[in-house]
Image (cartoon, rainbow, N blue to C red; front, side, top):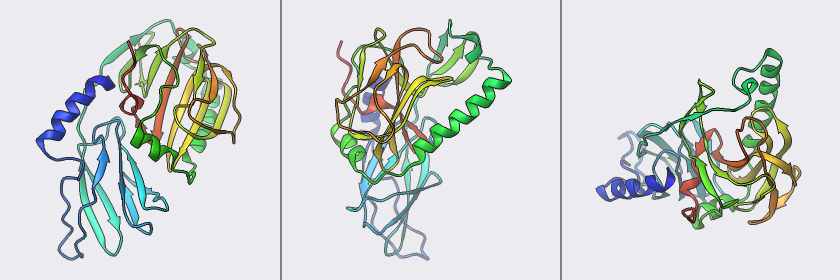
Length: 286
């Protein structure tokens, strides 16, 4: 889906509004600031970045956006991000602008053969799921002050594993006939045991061998809210606190958790916004 989205985005960009933001005038009662230039993909699942004064305060999508020491910042655009979004930047005065986000059409994917207990979990499983989700939220909510994510967004992430893409970002899933939540990652099918590598530098904030839905799971924090998650691993070779560089070994592909066969489910988040990894990597080789 990511490879299809890019040409559509480029056509949309050429038509007009884009990366500089589409508005930019502040209310007449406030002092005017110039528009802030943004770079990146203003499309659902994309990531934007820009530069302001290091002391600036930024608000976007209900979040207080952290600003790096050099004034750089990131904005993540979730799967269901509205077409019009308010960005507020306070430097000497308030600059309020509208970020226009291109909308995407998501496919419907039917998945059969997953363990039924992961489709209709018991009360005991629901309690476990709640605890594990809290653990994952905590791992993603850390605000590590490192700019690895920004550099990787600017220069491109690496694929953590090469192979056949068996699932794409955003698709609505039907598990064993029961509607489930959308799929927030890209699935790469390879045999169990295939090595999974870090797609960019970061710090490991979660390393679990057996989560209910995602099985062997690792979260790698790239800094300032941007993180990668690696699901369904058969083996986890890292620990919380490990500092990884691009290409470092994370784990091995498996079929743990809610899975029908061995594959890697690679997901990305910017705080509570789910990002499409395929928009940040080169096309998968044939």
